[in-house]
Amino acid sequence: MPYFSQAALFLIQVVFGFYTLLVLLRFLFQLARASFYNPISQFIVALTNPLLKPLRRLIPGMLGIDWAAVVLLVALMVLEIYLTSWLYGFTPAITAVIVLTVARLIRLTVYVYLVAIFARAVMSWINPYGERHPLGDLLAGLTEPLLFPARRMIPSPQGIDLSPLVVSVLLILTLMLIVQPIMDLSFTLDPRLASVIH
Image (spheres, rainbow, N blue to C red):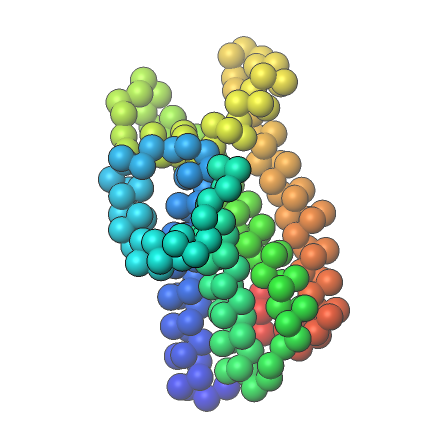
């Protein structure tokens, strides 16, 4: 690949990856009802509002789900896949792109939760007696909807909370048993994607 195309590919991955992550975080914070008065939340809101606010006029939220954010996430991922493919000199099949988009969004969501659970555990070790921190509050708000049901079902021997470990194992199994088969399906629908999208 020529140097210009390599630079363009890098910029596409950085810009789309960063913005997609911000929109996904905002969506997940809303879903988990995490605090939006947190300074980190406010930073994410400020960066995502320019695209989300106009889209919300066309796509209202329903059943507690911000459908404008969902549409934006899909659009960003689809556009990234097409731009990457065009740099490699081909136009992928739309069905393969949609399937791959679903797989990559689920994968990104799983990674967000894995990192959030790990970061929350580390912060609890560093600060076990709980001086409040904006990041800690946000991580708690994001992960508690997953950890609380596991905590109720799993005994805590010697007062040790095993829910982060159990939920992390289930998330990794999701990557192996759900995400990877969907990605493989997309590569079956258009084998060219396998060599350029990971």
